[in-house]
Length: 406
Image (cartoon, rainbow, N blue to C red; front, side, top):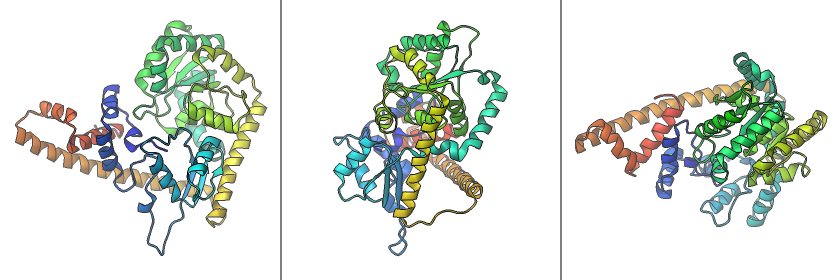
């Protein structure tokens, strides 16, 4: 909940550009937040609802679902901004007992928050067909995906706390012992999260210790259904990502959680202790994967179904509190409309981005003429000078590269 917009930028850039953006000081990061979000607030996942409301005669009911705040720190800069944003909602659902207790303790004027599993738990119920199509397409390219594989994901912070070579060695030993291929897939590639560069290094290390007949693959496709498909068909998911684990749960896949307080809070709320391992140190990986894979598929299905039903029940509570009628229309028609709106939004974003690039290009040309610098030196100048223009350039270049514009 406290993640700023600049932290959550989906940066499909190389490690150097990623780190430059991530290391910008807090004042200029706030400037980037304002430039990006304009009227929606500076928190990445908590919009400024006042800007979304209509006139007094046409108030829009607000609901916040699957709130995660187990890592909220009352001493943090965004703590009370998050709680103030949540105050504006008529309905709140939180995903773990730690967040539930925290919100109720600090905001007595809030409507009582419901405690439900994350809405991602319903993926299999709502989008099984989309996932199947995406993974079938992947199999047509990589036929070895029909054989069992372990899917591994960790964030960059994990690499800072653990020896990269040791992780690669243990991972290779685990996959070899259990006769599994190995797939590396990042969860999110915003600054400070996962990175292809680090996972590629890990893959190269693991390859030294694995049988040459085994496949080691870094999954590069960022299509959401492809990513879900790789988790949904894995022999076991291992990682630090909370939503990676929730996806594995939704599709009844064995899962092992590495050290992550958010995962610990969620699993402790919705699973029996030691049902599927979590908070696992790397040295215990092999034993933990064996344990996870030893649980019968019938029991895994029971857990998946139970959590999905509880998540869906949350919508019944939401409709009741907001006086919304039950939906009895065509679900596929609604999906088509959502897809159409998404395409329109992407086109609009692309148009705005092109305009911004043109405007900034004009501004840069004026600065270049003023300083009489050649183009290559101008770019170097704007890379390191923390001005409004350079912050805007950092954002635009990042977004443009992520969109494939240049």
